[in-house]
Image: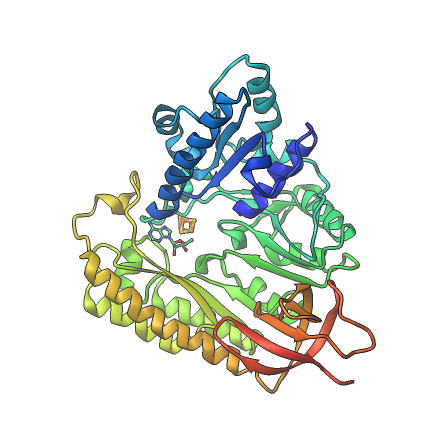
Length: 437
Ligand code: 5AD
Ligand code: SF4
């Protein structure tokens, strides 16, 4: 979602005369768009600010200016602390207020106010102030359809930084999707912290589910692929599961974080489902779409996690067989209920468990990729590869595929949707050759 937000910020600022630069040396302003989900992500901000302070001081000595802005969830969470500790920061703007950036920047440039903090909360107005059309480059794009979260998992800062759940109206999303397609996009990933809780307004004051929205997107000519992330198991309703069978535009890939394989830990996390319920959803998804590639997030070392709880997670992973996954050591976040628990797991033990889980998940990812060797996959070409004539694209299962395009009378181009014969598979990518017709 930060990638999407950063794109929107740069679109907004282009309206007041700014253009994206690839290096700080060429820039008049730097925006650090931040993540607060784990401590490591916030630490990155502090080290970047230290680096920018030196650049800003050097600019000052040369009589030049550098505006420094901090955006995103760290800004929302600890905006006041940032302005206190980092005098080089001119603007602090939360994820629900970045539509105000052009105004904030103008005010800083005019010198009226030197330090501006904007961390208002409601999600709704932001979208009303963002341009309806998009100027996007590339064949794949993100599109935020839902923001915020009312689930309050005990480990998570999102409900406090992104605010309450909000779904954008269907018409607004279709309009944005059409403008993306007009600029060359063929593959859209719908975004939301709880994307499958989507319930945006459609005509006659009725609500649309995510399945209905995807069906409507399927009518946009030129749009070939739709995905959505991130989903919560509790909102994986029957009509969304059957959408994976019914809607050809919906890709057979789903990120459905389970977090843990122990019912005791899931309860402590306030996830609102049991291992048995999660496995039932997986079975129903596979009935609807047998080849669906599943991915997940895991947290190890949540307070109170015993050896048995961790082993239950390994058992769940063995049972589901994931195509891909992200796994993290539990990171206590100030202000969340779990941070106050006094049954914290020893860091060394958490590190060992994480390594053990990641070995198993890596092996499953490799197995999944290798299971595609000898089959044909549909690849959307996204960019040139490193070798001459080679192109890189994505399979319907979200795998990166290197395609040798040389030798053919019609060289491959970005945006081609082609069938390839998969000839090799490693953990992170596949190699394919253009299928002979
Ligand atoms: N510690 C570790 N991982 C976390 N996540 C969210 N909060 C924390 C935390 N406090 C992970 C979850 C979530 C993903 C986006 O980040 O696995 O699904
Ligand atoms: Fe955080 Fe996701 Fe839980 Fe919401 S559902 S609190 S975003 S982990």
